[in-house]
Length: 218
Image (tube, rainbow, N blue to C red):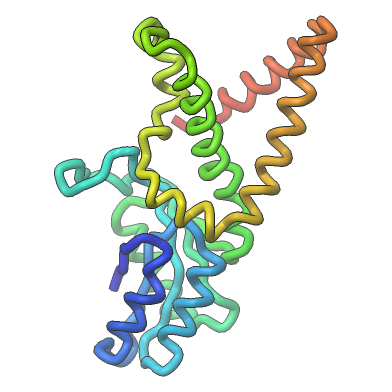
């Protein structure tokens, strides 16, 4: 069984259905935060014969609603599976096989490691895109009509649902703050290099960023 409410309501939903779950049922989720979700999920199913194994498919878009459904949503996408230390191997394999059958590339890791990773590769980009959009919202409105695709690409995820992201920011707050600190340090160094006309340092940073971008899978 896959449950897919907002991350703040996963445990509540599991509590409501726990008594109705059959013996040997395996339950997973699609929440983009794992440590807190997995802990509360196991507590919610403590008296149930079911087993919980956390999941997070790295798929989706800024769009919501059934009208934006995509039958190939998970094909070729990474999916994290985050079993607890005492999770039965058969239950973990059931969840891994489920996502692989949908075309996902499964990565198995701890819930804590997952939250650190996605704070950098998913949650931080959202914060940056949102902040850029917030800054530009204070500038003359017609500026946005003059931009090329670079601005659209950079701010695409700023169109994401605010309520969903409040839940994510709350539940992965500490890891996101650490990622933000690292980004602020990098931005400070870039700012200093530009202020000091240190073109060698700026070129180095531009080249490192370009090299990293070139290494992203298609």
